[in-house]
Length: 294
Image (tube, rainbow, N blue to C red; front, top):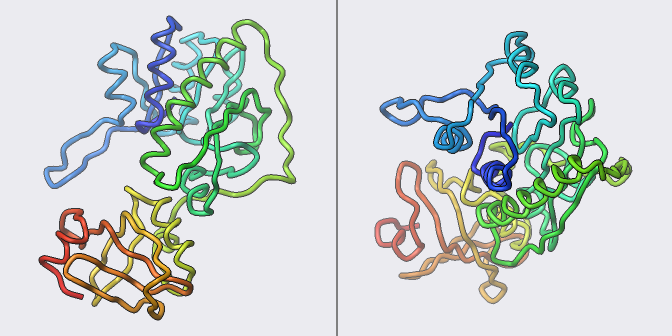
């Protein structure tokens, strides 16, 4: 069960290792773009190519959907970036339901663990597989694998690395369950930290904050949904920045050259390297400044 690109490597590795995938469960198709063209979720696209049965429930508590799941007679449900499951579903398989989560639980429980690790300037994160129970992201841990966060990493690059590490961890977890080698560990709730959904308010840059904090916010939200600010009522998204402590500017003060753009912060300044004016393409600063003056 999953939706985004992040889930594909886990499904792929299980297929490559001859595990029998009974079905894929994913979100409903959506109408997108100007032509309102129907698009599949990334996981459905992959599953269709592999001729795997795809189930797309509107409501997880739908009795017909639950009957279909029971008919599959699956040993395990594997969850990678999906919705919160009701107990009527996660208790169906005989060997349980486990989830791949993008953090070293109990740190960063919630919808956006990879983003918050970057926003908070962490140097290390990881993936966790755990058995699902009633409390969100709080079930017994099966396996954890660590990964170093590079200074150049943003949400896009770190997600890709973690999806591959996660796939290896999912495969090991399935093998452990198959061999009956499960020694799950109870999470220590006192070490739990939240990773709530990213809202528009969170993504709005506050130039009174230190440059390093804004730089990490940009990394955590790039390439999507992207940190942003308003200039003369126009929304400008920021995708890449560089810390600068040589140029002294007041918070939100802008210094522009032919090729460079600096904005003052509470401590230090930020050089803006990639940005996008609403309704336009993402550009390097040099390209952007050819057609826009601050």
